Image (cartoon, rainbow, N blue to C red):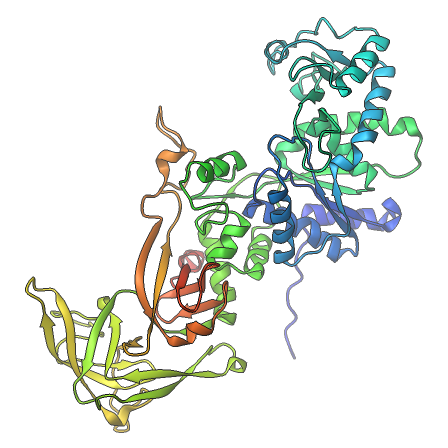
Length: 564
């Protein structure tokens, strides 16, 4: 009898949704949304949010919209919109509707008129510095603006003139009239609209006033019939404002349906990297990285280029789980997840990163034979391939030691080792240049050990990977390490910034030799270089100019820590 798999417990959001379903709230129809601002590329933290919202929609047979929070034309670009859509699809998700907050600009404006008419909003002429200085502190109430009790008709007139472009940027704002003594700073007459004479990527120059996030977000959820608005914990203090706008706008329409519900969960924090879009943009703009898809970046595009798979990222999000408290996740868990997936799907090949030449003295000159190699021992359906073998081969320089210690099982003078899929060889001579650097090894091979086994039953403990010098392809291999030297890159000495913690050794480029099999590969194809790690072909790789990125080494440090 097969043992049943343990039932996975529900996280607090799933428990809430299942209670809503039992009580027939929202008429049993669930609607989620993922609402990124198109002001940069998505990172691994966004991937967690994507997996949550789209995953819940799939699990509970609901719908999930993709809505772009495009309310700041100065920072937003079509490039980011397209990259976000590509990232979501690559992760394996499809949205029900593609929406934009800009779709609702007219409705949001009408609701601003409604709030002013109800005495719940006003136009303020105060400067940004004055508004900031009058906000008070968490323990001291704020000061009311001189414009707070402006007549309704005057505010309506000014709002219309703001919309028509009569005033310069920063000269006026629209503020909600709530409570300048509220202990929640977000409720102290928050700004609803500001003036920005800037071209918008969708509405062009139609508008010159743009809603703030807090004013637009809840109403956009409402318009789209979103039942569960999932946000990260920093928006918890914004929830009273989210509800206040809906209370004072939506209920006035006397619409008989369940209100949108905002629920917060802990955002993803990963060590050895930064998750701030502002900081990531700085890395790109100042040239510290190649671009948003640099394989050292925590962006989804960067992880993809490095060789991460959609399944590995989805599995990572699942393992991290959904919590109510902030914590920092070790990047080694993410590395564990990609190893786990690539071990099942990656094509095995051999590559030599630091080549040392071997000449097999008793091998026939000019002969090249093809040996059978297993493509993936985890999946026999992947079959086998032919690997060329010849008189001259390359091994890793680290796999030879002239004066080895005891229990050294790799190649050394007089020692015998196995070449993977090939023969037993024995080192008979070491060739050096004038400086004493080893340039070549002379070896002999046992013709009876083809395939890696000896008919006389003798065993060798060392097995080395190799490539044929005559048939191997040159490749530029990018060896990536963590982008920052410290676990907490935000931790800086006085006078320094997070840039002071950049790892100067986060990228090492080497000229390597690889099996000719890689000439058949396409960008983003995955490989395990036997004994070395997991790699993929870079987006710029071509058969005549191979560029290979190391995804992760073979050593699974997270699993070893988990076992302790």
